[in-house]
Amino acid sequence: MNAAAPRVIYCHGLPGSPAELAAFAPASLAGLATPLDRLAGAGGSYEHTVLASFDVATAGSEAPAVLIGFSLGAMAALRIAAARPHRVGRLILASPAAPLELGDFLPAMAGGPIFKAAMRGDFVLRMLGGAQAMMLRANPSFLLKTMLSGAPHAEQDLMQTPAASRALREGMKLCLGPRHAAYRSEMSAFVRPWAHLIRDIRCDVKIWQGTEDTWTPPAMASALAAQLSPHASITSCEGLGHYSTLAAALQALRIDPMATGSVR
Picture 1: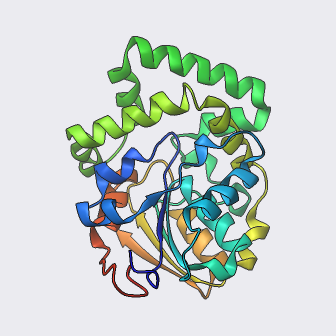
Picture 2 (picture 1 turned 90 degrees about the vertical axis):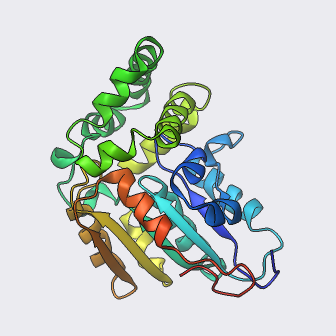
């Protein structure tokens, strides 16, 4: 990559993995972007792991990075932008999970029970994860079907494709298996107050939000955009859900790896 071109960093969702890039992004973007594999951090706090992973991923790059954050990966992208303002030029957030203190979102979130478990402490979250891991091993199709319950047709159709289904399964196996401790750490960080970090973000933020998203509802994206004002704008994706909005956002990006500001 041209030294003057920005690094494109992808922050995957949870449960999720870097495999989302290959499943939902066009080949040109998948080959250009660097996944921030923050679950592979060797100990330390969630915050330290995220920033350390970003520093490694952008080492040697002079231009401010473009961060793409999907779902709970939006929290990682926002934290990086707040802590490294001179090294982040733009945020692209798809189906973003915003701080829970910005509104009464949990009743409308399909993952509400998991976040409530995280609020009760690591032991409860560990027990829930253990039960989910057993279900994944015994009947993975049923668990994935449960995750997509209530999702719009566009979402159901997308997740029937082999690449999308494989990415979802890989993310579940990773987060409920070898990376479960890191997964729990991030979930715990999400349910704690962190909205105060947003006031330190000054770069341009583009939010993509599906109108039928059952995991991160539209009200969450609106509240996040209000906190980021005047730096944020929202693209509303009619009829799309959680993953289908991610696919739409990634497909819409235009890449020119030889020029500064290569992603728009």
